[in-house]
Image 1: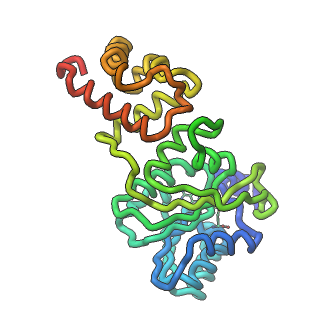
Image 2: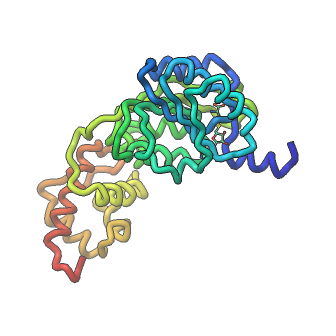
Length: 278
Ligand code: SAM
């Protein structure tokens, strides 16, 4: 492999799974049967694809790197129930494909956007079994009042029940990544709490977790711009709802449902602002 092609492989997160035990672990966690239609992101050399194709009715694989065509040909010849889509997974309209499960050893550089693309798919999905960097996985499953609790934890857990299946060492891949990985299982659910406006909720998460160790009140004032409000408006908001919400609590201690409540209070406040001031 020349140095350019090596750089490309790195950029594409090409660490291929070599240890069959983890392939088996991913497959068994997905509880696959012959009715399932599976989406996989990233063909690689087709190790995971082949195992998926053996048990599922159909497998769609989205792969960006045409250099992997030799592997694609071999896989499709042996397993006609596999369809390869040569595209950037972030650009594919996931509602145009019919699948109910997702199983993938993800390219880590797109972990966050691709996960939200799955979670926000209009048609939903039953479950996903996905490989991430271990540190990222820990933030996905993080609970309030722990050091891993983050904007990612709240946003992911709003859409899905999330479980860490197992940690995966670098030796399971070739080439070996520098960090540990983990298999995570997501079961899509209807949110446990109601949020009136998901855009406000998202902005609020960003605003709060930029200052996760501060009190909610301080975090909101410091991040007023993330809420498209002036600091004065945020101060008015805090004053107006201080009976209903404890703005003195630290951000990292707030469970998701309380952030949902805060988001709804914020919507109420914004709706009362004269149009010109909003
Ligand atoms: N499934 C294989 C395995 O387990 O060995 C490969 C996994 S490897 C971590 C990630 C794969 O995703 C690579 O084949 C890479 O070329 C592909 N990839 C990277 N970015 C992508 C993107 N934006 N859209 C689709 N595929 C991508």
